[in-house]
Amino acid sequence: MTQYDVAVIGSGPGGYVAAIRCAQLGMKTAIIEKYNTLGGTCLNVGCIPSKALLDSSEHFHNAYKTFAEHGIEINAPKVNLGQMIARKQKVVSQTCDGIQFLMNKNKIDVLQGMGSFVDANTLKVVGEKDEHTITAKHTIVATGSKPTELPFAKFDKERIISSTEALELKEIPKHLIIIGGGVIGLELGSVYARLGAQVSVVEFMDRIIPTMDGTMSKELTKSLKKLGVKFFMSHKVSDVTRKGEAVTVTATDKKGKEVQFEGDYCLVAVGRKAYTAGLNAEAAGLKLDDRGRIDVNEKLQTNVANIYAIGDVVKGAMLAHKASEEGTLVAEVIAGQKPHINYNLIPGVVYTWPEVAAVGKTEEQLKEAGVAYKTGAFPIKALGRARASMDIEGTVKILADASTDEILGMHMIAPRAADLIAEAVVAMEYRASAEDIARMSHAHPTYAEAIKEAALDATDKRSLHV
Image 1 (cartoon, one colour):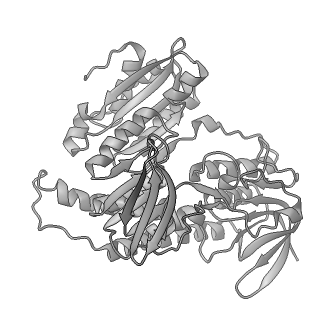
Image 2 (spheres, one colour):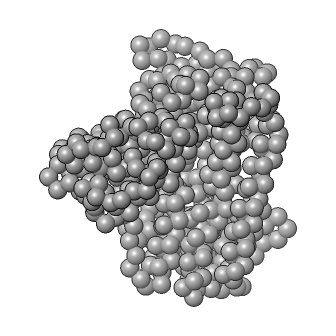
Image 3 (spheres, helix red, strand yellow):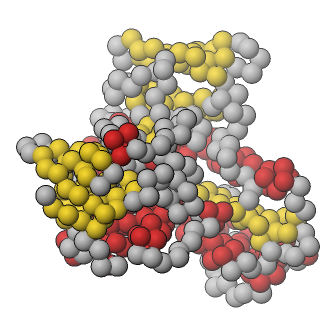
């Protein structure tokens, strides 16, 4: 029986980063993965493949809509969906191979098979051809999450689908009905809307991306409507049925009237739930909460002292980079160090185009908490860089403390917002004021100038270019 200092169950962004950091700190480490490829949901059926399709569809959209304005004359472009999917898979394969390389480089043993607890120090790994048992002084559970299935809309993986199947479609839907106006639904909806599908988003709340700042929701709604996406807010879905190639979604609107939507595909994107199936958590004595997540303390330690849990399987935002930070933290805690994570400064991103990104408190949260704040904003269309690239949609919004000027939140819908938000994270990590950013030189012409201008607006309404 092989003995390890640390065994990591799950090879997603949380698990593989935890394994690497443990190995860097001198621990004999194994990582257990039930699938044939490493990388978990993010690399295989989440972050990476969806971004590949988002970029491909955006290229098509630009060829169809904006090339002529740029002085580029081509024949009418056609979608080769098979090639798009093939390119996406190539990107996935290259990325997953990169994780295998990192495991080899750091001398981490990769055990392929389903990992489960025999007891708090013993794990069984059942592979396709064999099974074996290992012991570990410490175990890190990083088993991630799965798409949430509605009781009246079970996935048939053909017409009633999750995000996994939406990444592998063989045809462009005629009418894609999306249940859920969150990140996953909007990203995949924007992909197929650009490629020519009719897309309808049915959302229970009164706005899309309801956990983000209200201004971002409003601006993204306007942007996606320009792509032809239709929104049905405050609609409670009660039934989804399939007959042949037709799918019918039944919902009740805010007035209590029953409405039906007819399409050829229905994407159920109402969130994800922690995945612990097959873990045999009870054998190790692990406690789960009422949502099936593993209970942990501030060090991500479970009620069993030598077992930790990270990522989507514990409370908090289900984000790949949050899981990675937690993986690093746990490795360093096991090594006797004292790391920390500021969860308020974990950024969130929606990879539509323009992208939406945010960090810190929303305006709604500050109002609810009774915090006195001031607001600064700057429209992307006022940037010379934006006009040059024809990417003029969006705005940057900064929320700062009314008395100290410390930045409390930054929210943006903008080209490359996913990259721009890093400036906000750095600034807030060092507790910068809006005046601090306003005084910093930003290269011209760039999209980042919108952050400086919003900071100028937040200080004393002295934006220079509006």
